[in-house]
Image (cartoon, rainbow, N blue to C red; front, side, top):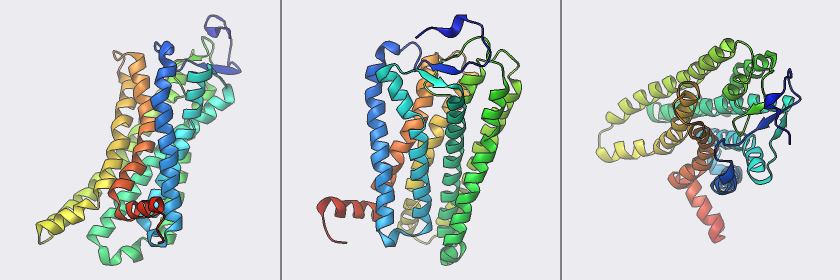
Length: 315
């Protein structure tokens, strides 16, 4: 494969993904934990979907939102991990110009959708704890479906400018992307033109989506904690708060690597490139792996159903 970094061209037909620059010699070894995490994510999230579908007692808003999260986790990891592993295993680095921008759109869209689902789950916890008698009338199946549709539309529309703006830029210096997928920042940095509009929109999208979502989650949990502290006994407070632990763990699993990855990509110029890319890879595969583990371990209904499946007991 020829190195295109020394040729002059405009808008190449393909980009070349380097994987993790500086660690190419270790790609095979790096692939082992990532392949393992991806396999666990696939198995875990399909198991969640299977259990919720098969168990009528789980057909309620909390588990519908969990299914949305599982589908989104499957999509976001599958949009990047197979290409990443093909780079690591087969040195298959080329990606077409159109496929690159398509991948960019879906990765950022699914990321925004995942964040929105966590807000919906926080709202479900708020209604269940603060207005328990009205939970079934507020969060009907119709309302849950409308929330899901709204999240899809929000993420799809807000992400659309990413590939549109990036596609308008001229790429006349190099077509080599120092990354394992077509991340917005990594692609536009290759352009030989002013990228401020794309960069500013990226920051706007980061703070308007993640920032607003975190704000609503904080507001929800402020109300939840106030309701918990009003409960008469310590056992009641602990039991009620325990219903939120899985969701709080899912929030930490998603937002912690997301913020570090986004901020180091834009401002961490002193952070080695391979560290920044490893942060990005952690964000894309670790939450999809952890979410089914968290809910499988912490949610009694799912844990009980799993035990029944493994022990072949009748439900």
